Image (cartoon, rainbow, N blue to C red; front, side, top):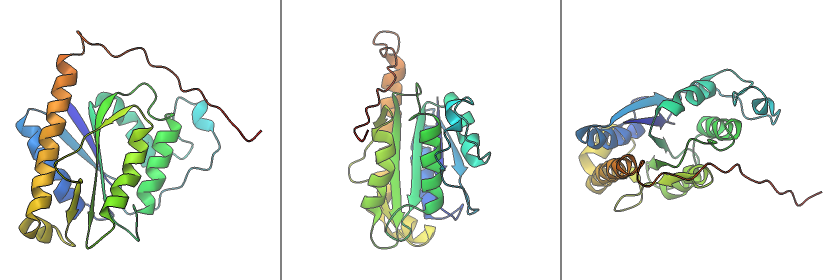
Length: 209
């Protein structure tokens, strides 16, 4: 089994990577591999509501990292999305990426239910709100959110601050990894005896007509 982890930080090896890596180590101990995809610091176009993705196989008209993620996801069994707090919320680049990934695929149509975890890191505050922002994408996409013994948040401006001082944050990430591994194994062990029902396409109702 494999997990796809999106590092939404502008810094590839910052605190977000350190937190995701702790989760990944626990998954690895249970025989589950994790591939970390760094979104990067380059500008990413926002969704322009052109709706071309409805007719070209769920691919975005902007051919960038978003289509890379869309192509990669089908071969994975779980998802992690992590990022730092940037001005009271998730980084703008990550929001553009998630908006387009989830819209182009019509909320990961047919991919779930699979486990997904959201995590956020901060220097001082805002991590809980940022974590909730990420979870909103999971909550409307047939994903099963994975939690820990506390909010999936960590503190530190630099990786060493987090790893050396935030004992509770480190433990939270480790427990998150173990919980995710358990959930993935339960789903895998019961896929034949308790199969998921046929995917139902979402009915859309517009009230402002």
